[in-house]
Length: 422
Image 1 (tube, helix red, strand yellow):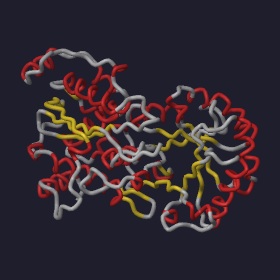
Image 2 (cartoon, helix red, strand yellow):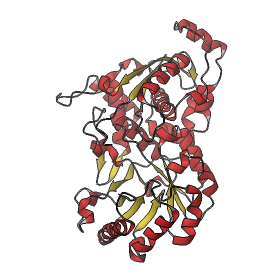
Image 3 (spheres, one colour):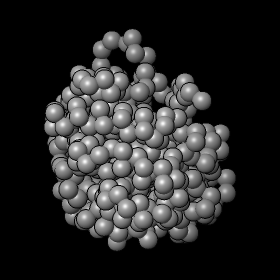
Image 4 (cartoon, helix red, strand yellow):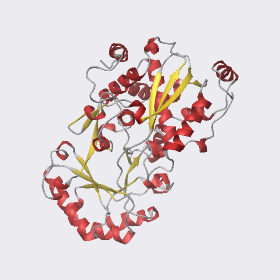
């Protein structure tokens, strides 16, 4: 069934000192188990439980501190804060099994962004310092192969990317599928491009082996890996042994079989969707378990530029970030964006500017928020959550016909200068 629109929830977090953060949870039918209506109910419950809670700045380290903070019991001081904010029932505690991964990711985005604002530093720098990492200024993205590549020419869109993704495992016969990919591989090879195939667990082991065999050695040399070739991921070891082709995991991560494959020589990468696995902290844990030999690729679920900007910023602090093409190119499949300055404006020649993503999120905060956050608080003071609001995409959509800068332009520029974004 063709997907005509995207519906989701934007989470807005305010601290007692006036710092603001935004997150997004936009469930994708067929990928997420939770619906928008279920998420709305969850987000309202999470907001009620977290109001008045104290957020330590170490949550940006992505080392388990965020989960410890969110799911811990209330301190006496926090109960007093909740009483002060007229929370109907104080001392409530969240249970992790009651929080969907996409809701967890959205609150993590918003809260960590609020921490960065309290630090008066860019979000990428806040996370990098907490993780003892470094930041790259630009990230490579993978593009999507088009009909032009199938017909033997390189499209203008594909020409900007060094890595192209090709969907396989559709309704075509195995032989037709192999012929199509071989034609694309010939074009890619002539122009110095690398292919990533994605079968979405479409084939049996024998079908996948037949596909690779029919591709031929020359076409295989242009392929970095094939993502999820098998309906049964437990047979991936045998697939690698029989074909010699590298593979990557995506759906298998959510299915819980990825850890047993980490030591296999043909495992090339893990494709992590923060909204599926449950946020950046969970992504970092998986990346650390995988080790340096396995490439980690961040990927999206057709979210708006709010989530994509957060994903790009987090990806910029991961190990070997400058060498990995991430799967954040879905922005061009949406007719509009929720950012005042769309994510597409940050992309040029197949790369996305982390600095432009930082600026876009900062403008969003000023556009929909209040500039009182400009009053700094002492650097060691924990952040108390004052209020958490949620709104639908329609609530936050800006009129694309509006001319001129968003409200609060001067305040945004002032804060970006403080944060080193200008």
